[in-house]
Length: 155
Image 1 (cartoon, one colour):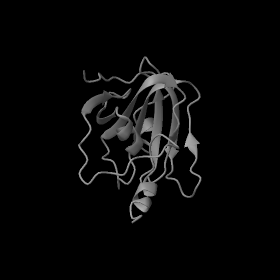
Image 2: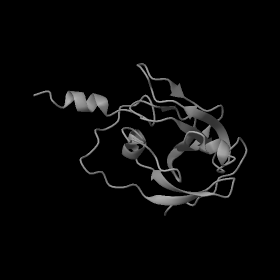
Image 3: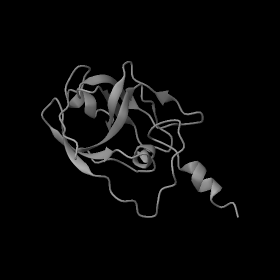
Image 4: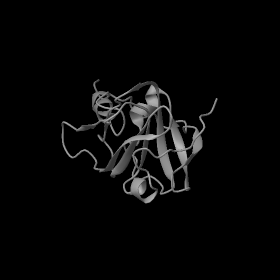
């Protein structure tokens, strides 16, 4: 009767936090992909996280992220968007961008949540976007405060 409780409790993590995330559907629709140009000149294929559902799911339960991929969280408001690592399987770099797509803050090598309560990572400045990439990628690709990232959102 209450078999849904455990999956519902597990369906939180590696995204906006600490907000409950919806349970993952059996076969989720793939998010839209766009190119993201990094300060190094390298281009990552980037999943757009625009809906509340996508932003809540983020990287949770994924075993890894390909080296040339990232997630781009798009928000309607410019504020101190908190990110947590619940149900994430690997460390990541979290990059907050201002409304001009310039790096406002970087949290490098953020580990998965080891125990409750999971820490929430917040930027030093308000942000309109958040990028999640594999740990070490930000430093390797010259993603530092003040650097510009290039992308065009789909209409």
